Amino acid sequence: MSYRHPEDIDLFTGGVSEIPLPGAKVGPTFACLFARQFQALKRGDRFFYENAGPLSFTPDQLADIRSVTLAAIICRNSNIGTVQPRILRHPGSGNEIVDCATLRHLDLTMNGPWAASTMTLFCKTTTCTFIYGITVLHYICIF
Image (cartoon, rainbow, N blue to C red; front, side, top):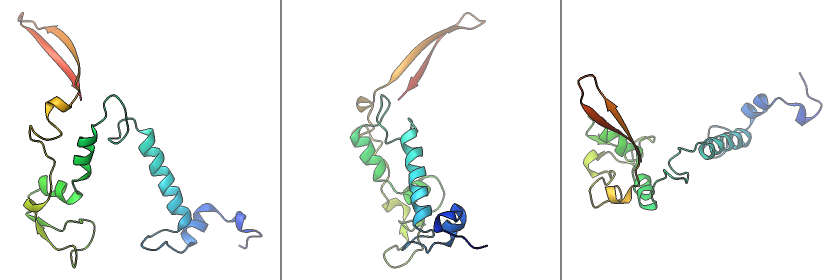
């Protein structure tokens, strides 16, 4: 099938036919569409960790989050002992295998950005009475 004008080409057909951008798997059309979609998802999600709001992280907490790599998260949540720092790249020159203990983790100490004094808690107290006459307070906290 031939097209009379470049604007007649189907978006998908044109997108998969483009030459990939340097270091990418897709061309400029799909790269633009993917970037716009992810940007809309990020900005439209009120719970996305970087978005401002009453339940947002402090600047120090955001800096702490940004300083941790995916490799460190995988190390912390698995039984592996070594990993390459840039986990999605092949190990090699500039990305040598390192011990998991050398990777930076969140600073959850009482002196770090996650100390209770830096967090604002929004709590609602609900009182419930059970069959046995014991009154229990339930705290629903969002932080």
